[in-house]
Length: 412
Image 1: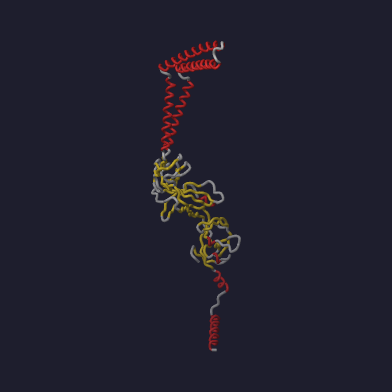
Image 2: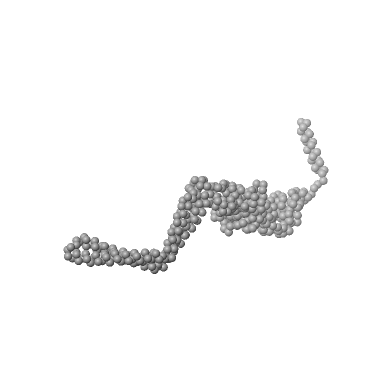
């Protein structure tokens, strides 16, 4: 009962105090409740720098797989993975015994062809001409004797004093004697007159062909050694001693790591910001180096919507390794335009985004058209005029016509 009496006394006292307080006009009360503190920024045209980060695998600026040019069995491998090799240095060798035999055979063929060429070029010696003449005379005498025997035997055969078999033998001897005389006559003519021009040309051709064969054998012999086509680091050894290898089997993989390349896949919407010669920053763990955009592909990759971009970074100390993943930072100046913070743009379920601008210390709702977003700033392509004040903080609590208390760039 006492508590109830106390509550009545307190309530009565509060009402009495409110009645005795000075009255506040309705207009002042309304203004006090609708004034809202906001932060604003002045609309101006500016260009924002954009930063893009991409990751890629480091690859040698030049890389090749090295194979023998001939088939054979590997007998030596002189380089290991990680070794630095110079252009022309021997990396491996094949068994060359069969190649040596081929080279010796080719050399012998050259000597034989050379002797034949000298013979047809110089002609016969006087002794050879005399010998050919003697052979011709001997063949003539034998032929004459055979013909005389043929005549006598014919008479005996007609008289029945010579059998048919003996008669045929005499005929054969006469024919052979005449053939031998014809051969001796041709031989004498060749020796006395010398070879014909066609024979000389043919023999010279045989000699030239033998020389080419010798050169080919010598060249093949040099191919038993595998040499480095470029200077660089042996990235991988792909064969072993004793292995039979062919021209299509790689033995080593070598890369020039004096500089490294990074292949990037840049979305086609951003490729307009990338130009050949742009400087970039390449980061590997806590190390940073300058790089250069070396190539921008003229065509996008089918199906991916990206454009290949190649970045080159120098690596003179070979401290960075092929296969590592590095990050490329590309900074560029964006297009000029009107930009406002993202939080300044409102929609509240409406189809057209809008911002609030300050006009006569009141909030004016202005529909805008949006462009790109750069570093949490939205580009306004239409709706705002340079010099206007846009509410950047506190816009989410505003309605058109609200009275504003303005601060510049500060939190309301």
